[in-house]
Length: 566
Image (cartoon, rainbow, N blue to C red; front, side, top):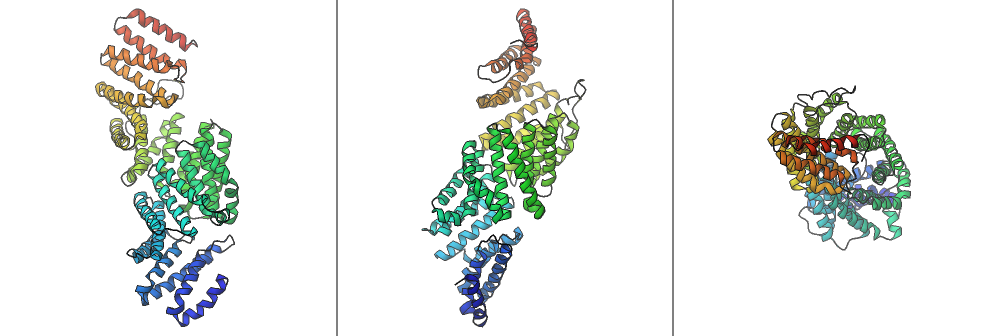
């Protein structure tokens, strides 16, 4: 019997005998609320069925709480499961109520409801920026599913959704390897279905494919990520016609992953095209929904597109995109706001527009501080980057647009002087690098900036100590590529200069020689001309040691190199 007819027949029976027929009507209404359809008005019909089921189950539970608590929990979960823009706070209240109804139950039916409720609550908490609490709940949801084995096909797909929530929490906490592993488990569950059933659970398959491709890209497996996207591309392009909001969101996310992977593989035009398409999709979604719904996603897409445009050499367009990202994220997503502000600040500094950077950092530093304790994995690295930029503006001479000597640095930015900002950046970066070696490069940058600040403040001794630590870190990272070797050379060059000032001339000579050796190594990937300044610095130090002939030879070598020699 069709579900709609069954509900119509059960309604009058339930009015006459609520305790007898009410549970059957509630069951039918809950099933109706979970029925997916691409027809117009489907979500509204699902929401109406869920509302009716919830009201009915509340009456049943009030009369017989011992018999109908599971029914009430199922109705609460069904209500939250309808994608009708229900406020997150209301959804969380309902899910916590559902968990309370079945928290102590041991029978399988109650455990299924408990697992589903925990998974949905975890997903909502992660959206609110509470990934740690969400992760604990999602792990408990997975444990509940495992205790219900063997699982039916629908239950296996709910387990897959739970695994995706766990992956999203790991991703939010900056754990790409863990996120990738659990998302691969979700994909294995989906692939274990027959082709017919995979079609039935397409939404799970697409969500898993996009999440997993994101993790593959984040762990340096761009080729695998693109292969996975290509496998699901036809469905990703079709799904927006059936389920516009979800389909467009998934398609946009897949395009952003594709854009970053294409850029990593040197396919610039394809990367720009994919990022532009993602921005267009998310603009439409953001325009059709409340600002909080897709504003953060749009800001992220604009930021990625802006970065790709900058890398491609279109600096006006790239900077404009980053400005749009800041506006889209403001009052909507502080994580994206901090990232966009910092990206725009770096672009402005690169373009020599240092005065335009101060207001950006004045906004970015408080935003990152606000969340640094609650979500340190995300906001502490952003705060370190913001503080490093403060040091740049307050410890380094600003370039002059007309070619004259650089303008003196600002005294304070975001209420901070160079040494104060630099010390805070180093302290935070030390904690991050101690917990996760991936942040050692960030610590190296923070030390390099603090060196300049304390040296400018008149303490070359501390500056030299900071640079020794920076050199140690950058030596460890120098095998990663030319950029890392260039940064090592800079640190060695500055160390040589500090030691020269301290009259530790033999040590200075060694630092300068090490700097030149890094640049001239066969595998350095650096242009020979980068050795010009280190050669001159070495010549200057040798001259102080009265090694005049050697100093003159090196100075001549530097001049010839600067004029185009090798």
